Length: 329
Image 1 (cartoon, helix red, strand yellow):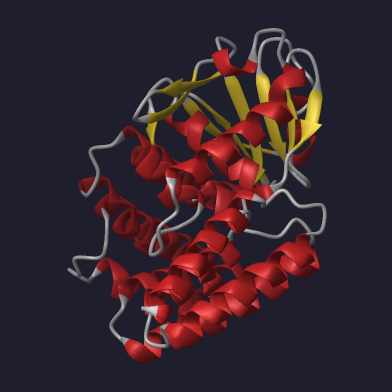
Image 2: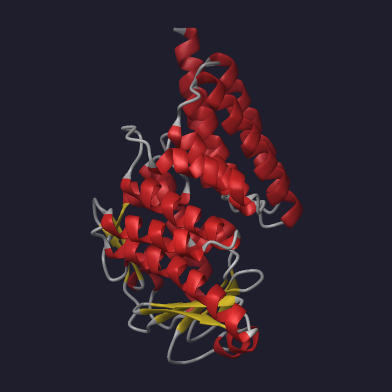
């Protein structure tokens, strides 16, 4: 009974910690989360889902480059610990594969991700298969095998009937085609322009020009630190709010369900309550409020009982580095 009460208390602390993410001190916020997770792990030493979930949180956080690298190292350790409990866990391998991709260890990334897209494990969801195939295609392309990359993208297309997934596949296909074009023309396109109905590789000069404030678009510029340009103001955005905004933009004008938001922004494996999503949406609204003349709750609309929807009449434009796999994938 005492153990159960302590577990409930710590899980409540964990949800409060998530809702406090926009702390002024990133390092302190991460440290407190690690302390809570460590105490939970001591009470439930065989709870690999907790390790996997917290590792996903670490992978998605880090405004400071040193903190981000440190979080990736810690996440790798947690994924490897979880694999010791279940060496066949495809979700752990999925995330380890993407850490290898980030470190540009292409062959190791392929080894982990191939295990995922060949698996029939019930824990895997459609996006695991599709993103594993897309990321494998990126790795093969970097190794100089665009033919294999395109074959994997064709496989990914056969697994999706969702517009959202098709967009991600198209993004990677552009990278494969851009590499071939760059090798032919010796003029590499380093950035990707993402709009509602098109994905276009662009040069550095084009990225600078397109990132300038434009009354015809709202712009999420992620060339360096993320900045959102609205019709009335421009504001910087921290990592989690960038993920949350992208989650809404990619689904627009459709509703983004609570479950999809939790999975895309925080990862799966541990319960993130809807009230945490609501608090983070309020933080995003507060951050973007000065960018619009309309009330921000008419831009980010609550669809009661389901989730949220982006309802800005002005079309969006996202500019991101081709190498920023976390956002392109």
